[in-house]
Amino acid sequence: MKAVCICFEVHLPVPLRWYWPREGYGETHIEKYFDMEKAFHNFKKLAENLETLNDTLSESIDNGGKYTLDISGVFLEQCKWAPEVIDGFRKLDPEMVSFAASPYYHSVCSLFPDMTEFREQVKMDIATIKELFGQEPKTFVNTELLFQQKAIEVIKEMGFRCFISEGSHNLMNGYDPTHVYNSGIPTLLRHINLSEDLEIKFSDKGWAGYPLIADKFASWIASMDGDVITLYIKYDAMNTHLQNNKEILEFLREIPLCFKKHGIKMLLAEEAVDMFKISKLSSLDSKTTARYGMHNLLGNHAQHLFMHELVDIGEQLMKVKQPERRTELQRLFRYLQQSEIFLEMNSGGRRLGYERAVNALLILSDIERAILEEGE
Image (tube, rainbow, N blue to C red; front, side):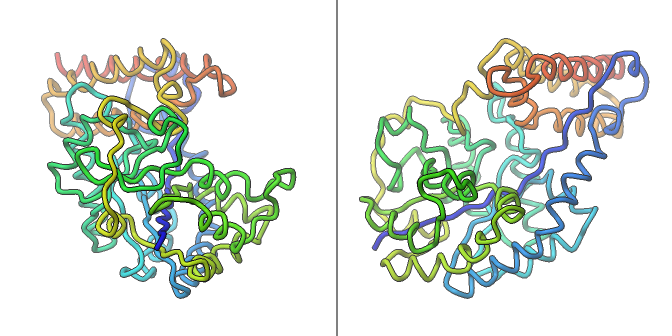
């Protein structure tokens, strides 16, 4: 029997402010560097429909659906603006929903030379999931679906049973990722095209597959070779569809029934790696990848410079003597690790990439100045 694993990423970044040095060289606090008003607006916009989405997901579960949720610590912190959002996720059947762990701040800390920060953020995320949802995460998802051997070694030591990463072309060499793979830990790789059919194309009336109904989608998967298809989809994309095409709700309700009709089983990620034989994929031994390619994160000089300075700041933080001040500065340091900050510096693919890089480096410089002063 073929199987499908569906994982939803629930995350909203805390965006940087447009910052000017004339504001600086004084106190350092989150509102000075991060646009909390914009973060609040983005959160409220998503939260308005989360009850509808979660209720529909619950109906999908009643029809046999199983889902893995990758909820970032950054998002959970924003839930202070609407605590009922967390209650909505708590109400989902715990037998049919699992919560994956990831770096708490949706950060790129797994790319640091030293893995201490990565370990600490993963532990933070595990503790938060246990506290809020009463589950011990068994599946790990790295930020931006990053795949690298250093991180694999750490999460294996931490006892994770499953790892979800990007099924990129440099790993798959033209083949579809339709098996459980071995990278030191059983690994599921996102099927990019099928994930994007739901995440990006679903409401596009110009797309050849429009309208995408559940039975059509299930039939596509039924016709494919392999054991398991892994879909990794941003939950806020479902909200975007909801603004333009409410058929996404019907799709979510019906998809478990249509999978069953076509002989396809919905599984949690940790169930899939126990059910199917592990296949060898030699590229996993030597390649590094991320969602849409490593060049999006570290493809230009500004991104590399920002990474270098972040690593340096992490080392300088240890010299801050006052514990409360170190904790405050460490929080800023960790918010600066958000992957979106790196992605926005990609001048080739995003508007104002160069300007955003300059802005991010100015903020980083001011925080580094504060850390150096505290360490004197």
